[in-house]
Length: 142
Image (cartoon, rainbow, N blue to C red):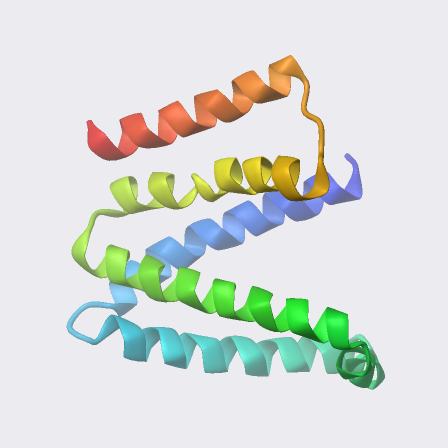
C-alpha cells in the first residue's frame, strides 16, 4: 500500500471518531465552547508530536516565509470555521446526516483544485466526484 493511501485511510478513520466522540461530548454543552476546548487539546497534542519527532526547530521557518504563514493562517481559520459549523451541526443533527454533508468537502476541494491549480481530472474521476456528491446528498436527505 502506498504511504499516501495509508495516511489518508488513517485520516478518514480519525475523522470518523471525531463525529462519534464529538456527538457524545456535546450533550448539554455549548458547541462553540466544546470546539475551543477541542482546539486547545489538538494544539497541545500536535506540539507534543512535533517535539517527539524533533521538529520543533522548524516552527520558525513557517514564520519566516510570509506567504507560507499567510496561507497557513488562512488554512487555520478555514479549519476552525469548519469545526465550529461541524460541531454545531452535530449538536442539533444526526451523525448519519451531518457526516455525509461534511464529506462534500471532497467535492468542493476537487472543484477548487481544478479552478485554482488547473488540476485535470479524468472522466472516471469526474464520475466518482459526482457519485460522492449524489451519495452525500442521498444519505443526508433521505
